Amino acid sequence: MMSERNTRQKAAVVRVLEHASAPLTAQGILAKAQKRVPTLSQATVYRILKVLLKKEVVATVQLPGEVPRYELAGKGHHHFFRCRQCGSMYAVGGCTDLIEGLVPQGFRLEDHEVFLFGTCSSCARDT
Amino acid sequence: MMSERNTRQKAAVVRVLEHASAPLTAQGILAKAQKRVPTLSQATVYRILKVLLKKEVVATVQLPGEVPRYELAGKGHHHFFRCRQCGSMYAVGGCTDLIEGLVPQGFRLEDHEVFLFGTCSSCARDT
DNA sequence: GTGGATGCAAACTCTTTGCACCTTG
DNA sequence: CAAGGTGCAAAGAGTTTGCATCCAC
Image 1 (cartoon, chains in turn red, purple, orange, brown):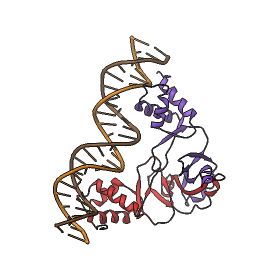
Image 2: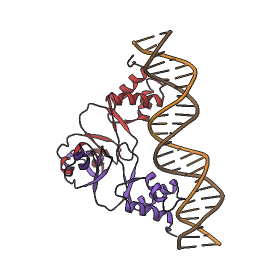
Image 3: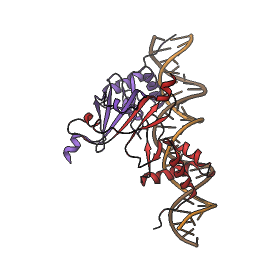
Image 4: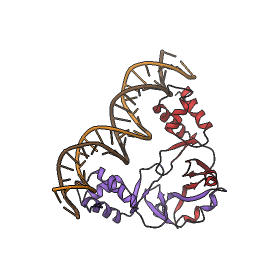
């Protein structure tokens, strides 16, 4: 039973995610990782992501109506604010007990997702 | 300038949505609407949904990692609780100002989405 | 009768998979 | 050198679109 190998492809994908300031799409990861490993294919990116997701090294970010994005896991609990002007995503922390109040009697809350949409501070300034 | 026509297809789709107890997928709408209009095609369902979305007669519900679902609009602001045991979706109301606290300084909040995941009361009872 | 609506199939996008080849350990 | 990884192309799932036909008005 031979475990996992260290390939240039996987290293490139992880490196891209480490340097990302916001969650990236599979396409975005491919584009950036190909600068280091030009032969990298989209299929391999998906395969690597699947492995990393299972190991919980990366996490998926699913904005409603958008293609999934990926970020390194272990950043603690957070949500996202999406600026409708510039499209940037900002991580937003803290949300506990705010959510608990929504849960109906007898329901057991295990998890939640919150997405905020609006205008970020720099776009708001330009208005 | 001739407006919109009243077709059996559109009527069937609307009727299905009116009788739905939870948001339906495009496939689910097709299946149910075909009981009334057997020749209805998936393409037409999508076209009708597009029109109804533009008129804001229906709204999209996008659970993370799932195919989009559709429900009649005008049910007021609400979110969803998804039971991981039985897969049911429950509408959850009320959430104002809870959310405001998350918004960073200088950001303008326009909209938000909240999804809750866990065990519903009837599944919790069986545990 | 005429133009919007429909059905079918082809096209598209995103993701997964089969298979031969390559590369790591 | 053996097994896992990779690249490519084909296959899938979900949605959109082109086009000839249909039918509501």
